[in-house]
Image 1 (cartoon, rainbow, N blue to C red):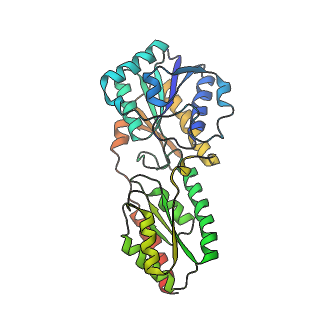
Image 2: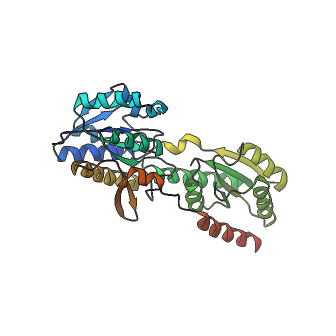
Image 3: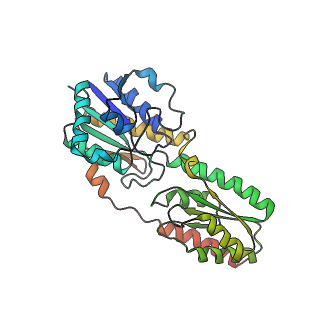
Length: 327
């Protein structure tokens, strides 16, 4: 009979991870299970940084950003000998199941541990929203709210001085942060990985906005498209006549207090994850589809292709072009 479960956070941190941790602890406590936290992800698993916590540990962490149990990247976890050490540490503590919060790499680690006899359930923890088995990942809602606030602030000062701002956001190879926050923040141009504008195209679009006598311009771009957004800003300024400034939001997108929706989704998914473990199920990835929480095999989750955002981007782009062309 299951008596002990563990929880770890792995890879890049994201807001809402603590709400998920709280959800696991509270649900496990309600089911009379002991909960162990593993410090610093798979690195802590290998180094036996494992601690028993009680229900009080979860009381004050819901509102906190980051992950209170720490996270780390451990590429060496792909090696069988490293994983065997991790499994030995878990078995020494009597831990039979594990909730893993992280991205694709964390999912792969959870799958390998499941194959070695540790029942693992994975939760999607990343601001990038690039876990294709879930409509939303833990951290995404807070991240786009941070970006929208930054766009709002930049719009204020650009409007004051008749300038152009180029805002680079995170997302790795996924453009969801740029697209969602760009639309919500009223950006004039958005460039995402699957619908990337060239530097010259951006400059020419800004020229058209200048001719339409637009007082301020905000361009939102995903990372990993342009080698240097500051050089892009110079090109835009040279061609358009707008004084142009580039802002790289960077890791500010990963910190801060999680939104209410973030906490709600994370807590609900964590509760569902523990229920799967209690039912004897493992090797699962938890996600949400619409208003439903779903579970599917991790390997199936990793094989789901990413939904295209080109249609959404094209609708936005066409609308904005029509607006300034008619100005």
